[in-house]
Image 1 (cartoon, helix red, strand yellow):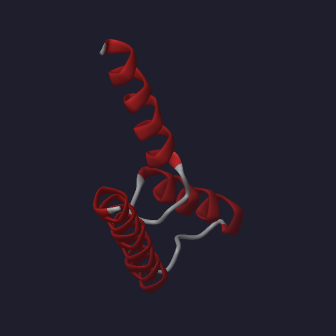
Image 2 (cartoon, rainbow, N blue to C red; image 1 turned 45 degrees about the vertical axis):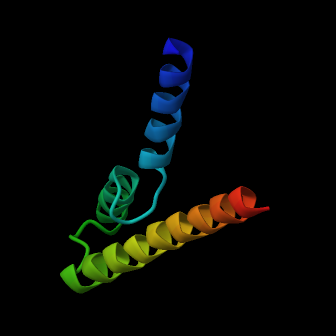
Length: 74
C-alpha cells in the first residue's frame, strides 16, 4: 500500500511539473520566457494560456472518465 502511495505521489509530481499553463510547470515556463525576453509576459497571454491549460486538463479528465465508463460497462 505504501509503495502504491509513493508511486502515485511521484506520478502526480511529474504531471504537476509538465509545462501545462495553470500548473506549476506552466508557471516555470512563463518564468523561463520572462528570463529569455527580459521583460514580463503580457497579462493577456498569461490569462489565455491558463484558459487553454484548464481546457486541456478538463479534456484529459473527460477522456479518462469516458474510458473508465466504457471499461466498466463492457
